[in-house]
Length: 259
Image (cartoon, rainbow, N blue to C red; front, side):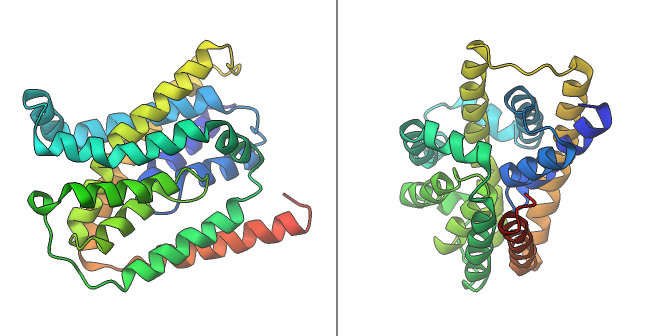
């Protein structure tokens, strides 16, 4: 893997982790385009570290608040919102790893992501701010996040959809979605690190990995800031159309044996 390829893959991870279009699905396509289908686990871990750094910087005040007050409502909202993904991830880890490697379902998953985004965009704008979020809201949003364990189902997309359905206003839905990404991304890094300790390491240069992580962090930071502002006044339907087109293209290539 060249440094340029690492930079591009970092950019893809950083942007698509927080735009509602699926980072895992786009990373799979990006690696396939560069012929790097075997360069997976170690690279993905470093790219996830990059996006985790981005949200650490943006949510540093919230994280410091949790450290100072570990038994606060915010702490329990994040715990409750993370539980569904932990349960599903541990129960079906091997199955989802297998379909992630083959990419056989990602075309359909892009289409499903688009459907959720389109339907949620028609939901009347909610009224709940961060202080109004209940534990039930967190559990429902977390359940949507658990469904995003499929490779091309967007985690950020479905958690935003879950927030809108629970009557969070658009800015708060995005804000809580990205805050909830911290334990989700951290958990993915832990699981990937355990696999790395078992010797599942690819031969990738340190410089390329560092470039990928930095690129992921920078573009992740931009994506979070931009998305929170964008959702205040704009529709999700543009993202829905994009993933529909992408899904149709992927399915066409799969059916014709080109992918």
